[in-house]
Image (cartoon, rainbow, N blue to C red; front, side, top):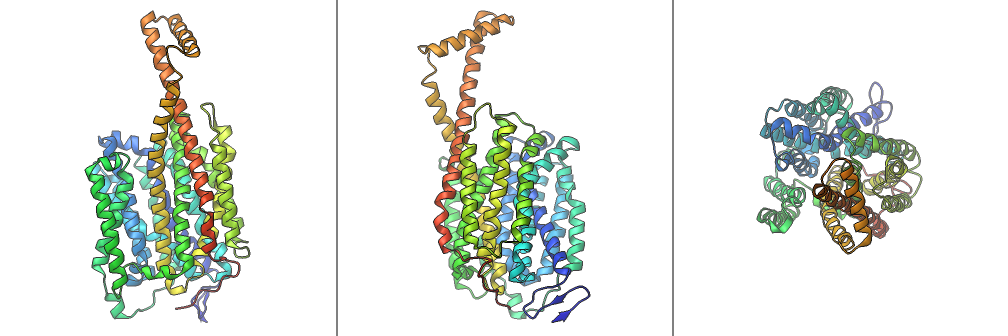
Length: 528
C-alpha cells in the first residue's frame, strides 16, 4: 500500500481513510453545480427576455445552447480525462464552469448570454460523468452504495432544487444572480479538487498524444444535431420544417459515420467497445428510459402548476422541494443497503412505485391544489431513488476499472438524451391531446345543449349585474365558457401525460433481466 497523511491507496488503486470521503464530496459538488444549472434558468426566462429584449424563440436558446454543449462533452469526458489527466481535466472543467457563470451574469445582450451558456455547458459536461467515474475509481465495491448515494443526492434532487433556488434568486435579486451564485461554490470546489483528488499517473506518450479529430467532429455534428432536433422540434412543427428535417438527416447520418469511425480507429475519442459489457448496454438503455420518466414527469408538474394553478416561480419551486428532500433522505438510507440487495429488485420496486404515483397524479382536476399534489410528489421523489442508485451500481459496478470512465460517460449521455427525448415527446403529446380533448368537449358545448344554455344565461346575468350591456355580457360569457373548456382540456392532457409515463415504466421492466445483480454478488472491478 501507498501511504499518505490521512489515507492509503491500495494496490488496486482504491483510496482508504478520510480522504476518500473528501474526494466524494468534491466530485459530488461539481456534479451538483452542473445539474442545478440545467434547470435553474427555466424560471428566469421571462425576466431575461424582458431585460435583453429577446423573443420567446430567441430566449429558448439560453436553455438549448447549454443542453446541446452538455451532451456533446459528456461522452468525450473519458478521453479528455485520459488525455489531459483526470484531476487536471476536472479542475479545468470547474474553473471554466465558474468563469462561464460570471460571463452569463455579466451578459449585456442575448448573443453574449447564449455563447456564455454554451461555454458553461461545455465545461459542465465534464463534471457529471467524470464525478461518477471518480467515485467508482476511488471506492472499493463494498462501499460503492454509500459513495454513489452522495453523488446521487445532487443528481436526483438537482432538477427540483434548481427551480426553487432560481425562483428565490430571480424574485429577490434578479436573474443575473442565478449565475453569480455559482461563484463561491465553484471556488470551493476548485480548492477541494486541488487538495483532495489524487494526482494523475504518467501515461504512455503515444497514447496520450493520439487525437481522434474525425471522431470528435462527427460526435459534435451527430449529437449536436440530434439534441437541437429534440430541443427545437416542437417549436418548429417537427418535419413540416425544413430546418428540423435537415437536422434529423444530418443527425442520423453523422451518428452512423461516428459509430463506424470509433469502431475502426485504434485510439477512439469515445470507446464504444465498452458496450460489449452486457450490464452497460442494458443499463444505458434503461438509463435513457429513466431519463425520459424522471425529467419528463418533472417537466410536466411545473407547467401544470404555473398554467393551471397559476403558481409563481417560487411557489412552483416550493411545491417540488419536499420531493427533492425525500429523494435525498432515501438516497442516504439506500446507500447503506444497496450493496446487500439485488439491484434488479430495487429497480423493479422503483419502477412499479413510480408508475403507481404517475397513475395517482393522473386523477388531477381543475380543483387540484397543493394538498392533493404534496404526497404524490414526495412519493415520486422517494421511489425514483430506488431506480437511480441501484441502476448505477448494476450498470457500472461490474465493469473493469479501466472501462469505468468511458462507461460512465456513455451511461450519463443516455440519461441526458433520454430526458431530452422524453420532454420533446411529452410536449408534443401534450399539445396533441389538448387539441383532441378540446375538440371532444366542444361537441357537448352547442346552442342546442340545455346545460350550456343555462350556464351562458347564468354568466350573462352575473356580468350584466356588474354593469355590462347585454351584448357585451353575452360575448364575455362565451369567452368564459371557452376558457373553461380550454382549462379542462389542458387538465385532461396532463392526466394523459402522467398515464403514459406510468405505462412506460411498467413496459421497461423486462430490460432488468439483462442487468447484473449490482451490489449483491457483484465482482470487484479489475484494476488497471
